[in-house]
Image (cartoon, rainbow, N blue to C red; front, side, top):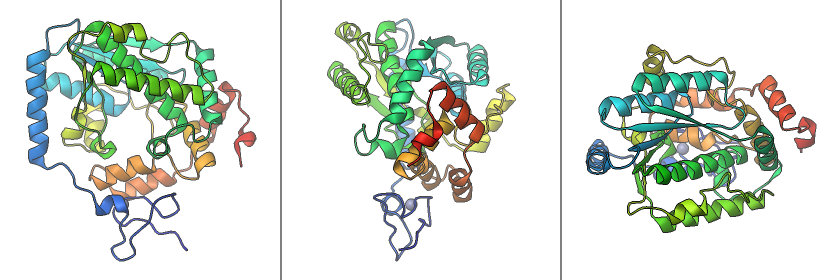
Length: 340
Ligand SMILES: [Zn+2]
């Protein structure tokens, strides 16, 4: 059968599990898509404001913020502090061994502008390279749906960030952790954690690391058990405010550029901050036969945050060969060995 592309988003019938309804031309996700109404968004935002007022001012910080230095997280940090200037924020940037100099410069600048503290989470390069090589060499180590959300390399990286931000929130007694996911990534706007849930997610991530051949005995990548034991009365909540705000890529870019955020010269249409991303996409395409951003971009198109044309452009843009080569060299992987 010839390939059908969903009329509304960018998913196509070549992706395992995706069928396009021939009558209306839509994929299953678009057929059943119900966006948050503006009223629901407002209710969530009111709830977040109530939470901020009730729980801030207690610990060393109010918010532990996941700052990649990319445009979305830079914008979210800026708007968060503009809307809620009373929040004391610690922005954490994970140096995964591949973040661009621009990303570090941008992150520090955004912290300066917004008056937030900056913390760079670093690990030894060899440890990180070994970790990402194992992720690249793994196949289907994660639960079934993980590969639709992101590449194996990205899933590992995001996993570490989540673990270490939760750990930081507990240590700093900060009641909130904020991520800059867009509505297209369809996060739950408010997620209340509990000690049990944190322990469960820690152990789950530990198993996933073991599956790709990584024993994290020193708990470098995991929330330390000792920290979970000392969790206070209130476990932190994860908030996703960006999915409740009006979003367009152009407006976000314009806002941050006006603040002095520098657009990186990276030739990667899906990442403005990570030089490993092109390789991660290449690796995923080789292993699974579809683009790791397909669902992410489809979500953005479906929710109206990106035009369908732009989404298709991003998915079909050729990956940067120099970026792929550089990353493969660092990871000590031969590119032709990856080809199937
Ligand atoms: Zn669709």
